Structures are given as structure tokens and as C-alpha cells.
Length: 325
Image (tube, rainbow, N blue to C red):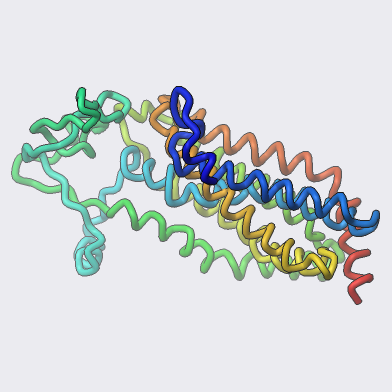
């Protein structure tokens, strides 16, 4: 980590000192877990290999999960119609969940047509007197009249969509799993990982469609797109997230259980860090469809590649459970 912090070339490798430090700090951890694999007997090596495969897939899953607080929040801020319906404005205002926008001139950053802030020679953001940046990709004929305000749902409230869907969809998914079990078609854990990862990719694919639905630099898109994306992702979360630590505790050799649980938490942190690094490159992607498409493709491909291995992986899971008993 210290080496990563101080390495200098033409610039930072992963966008910042902290990113470089984090990635470099992961290298000895990866080598350490690799050494565990080499020291194991054949049976334990199979078990650890199973976990490593699922760890790799889960990194992609957690990357999409953590875009909640990064790229999806930026999307909600700049490209989503956030006007609050009149009948809920009073209630939202009580909790300070509203943002007020009008055409009154004020000091705002100078943005180009792609919402990139203009920097001065000193590296600081250039400002000018103008309308609120929210109005930049709204046709002027749709701007509020002089003296009138637009009441918007605050951007950060969109991060609450995922918890909302969890409450709504948990009984549905639990019921689905129960129904499949009663019909003798219960999904094994590796299959849940595969399906969950593909569904996570579909949630990003929804954002690709949203970005292509209009010219987002001239028109905002409906909040329905981000609601739908969160809803689909929540389904994937209910497939993958609950089985993670349980699977590790069942499959890991007993002497390595704690270390393998640590490996699971490392995958969550790696996914979060990758999401942060990707968000740092947000402005480099004028095509937001391409930005979300990368996550969609990675997740869908990873899930599809996992499917041919599910029977073999599940056999190892069953054998590991039997040996632990």
C-alpha cells in the first residue's frame, strides 16, 4: 500500500494515490491466499478453488451493488427528472427531502455540454452567474417561469430505492424459492450465484437502455428507469447476498474458515473500490450507455461462464458439507 501511494509515473495508475495504495495492498493478500491453495491437499484444494471462483464472480456483483452510491447517484443528479409530485411535496419538505430549483441567476460552475466542469489554470472549477445546473439538459420552454420554483426530490433519496425494493421483494423471492423447493426444483447455491450475477448485469443493462432512450445531454429521463434498475438489482441481491458467508462457512476447510470469511469480505471491499474507481472515470465516458454496458457485460458473461461449472461446484459443496458433518 505504501509503495502504491508513492509510485509516480506520468500520473496515478488508478486515478488517485489512495486507489493505487489500495490495489497494491491487495497484491500480497492475493499471493497469501494463493499460497494457502498450494499448501492444501487435493480435496481441500477443490473446496478452496470453489470459493475462489465464487469470490471472483462476487467482485463483479459487489461492483454493481456499490454503484448505488457512485455512478447511479451522479445519474440521478444530472440526468433524471426529479420533480416531486405536488401531493407529496409537503410531506417530503417536512423531512428536508426536497431541493428547490429556479431560474434566478446565481454563482454556478461552468459546465460543458457533457456536464464536465471547466477548470481554470489554477486547477480550480471556473464559476459564473447563471441558472441552476439541473436545468442544463431541460429545454428552455420547460423551465419554471420567473418567480416560480421546481420542487425536486433530493438526489441522495434515490439511494433509498434499494431498501424499498428489499422490503417489497423479499417475501416474493422467499416464496419463489419455497415453491421451487416444493416442486423439487430448488436452486443450488452455485446456480443462485450464476443467476444472481446475470440479473445484476440486467440491472445495468436497463441503465444502458435509459442512456440510449433520449439524448441525455438535452433531455432528462424518467425516474422510472432508475427505479426499475434498482428493482432488478434487488432481485439479484436476494439471490447472492444471503448465501455468501453461509457458503464460506460450509465449504471452507475448518482450519481456514476464518481466513476464507475474510476473503469474502475482501471481495465486497474490492467490488466497492472498483465501483469508486469506475465513478472516477465517469466524465471520460461521454457515452453513459458504454459506461453501464461495461458492468452489464462483465456480470452477464461471468454468470454465463459460471453456469457450466454449477454441477461440479455443487458436488464439491455437498462433499464439503458431508465432511464437515
